[in-house]
Length: 136
Image (cartoon, rainbow, N blue to C red):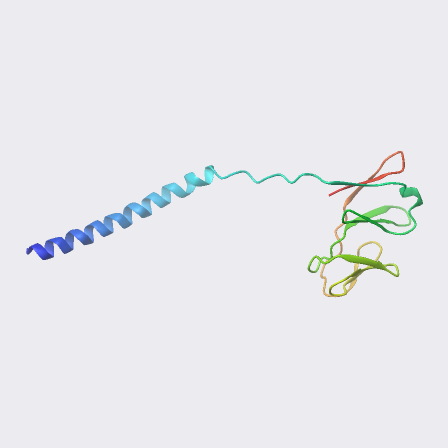
């Protein structure tokens, strides 16, 4: 075998060996690396407090949360349309998206528009002193 052919064969073997080692290293390293991933950060629980809820006669907005008094219960919704997240206005007894015109009734049910979902209800707790506490 000539010297040129021998060098070419050695180069091919080294290239193949490097490829195999990289492949085997990747196979063992990937599961090991996944063990050291940082745990997802917990979101801080946010609370919005509304004062004087017994006298609530129209929807109130505070810190991005709508508070609405129904006939028998109190509802809370985020101030974001379910279509693209635009802010909402309360007009003539309905929530109206400022951007694309989606409309929701007083209970957050979709009436019309490009939004495909109702407004998500947030947890509301009533305190003995007439406050409504909304957890986000």
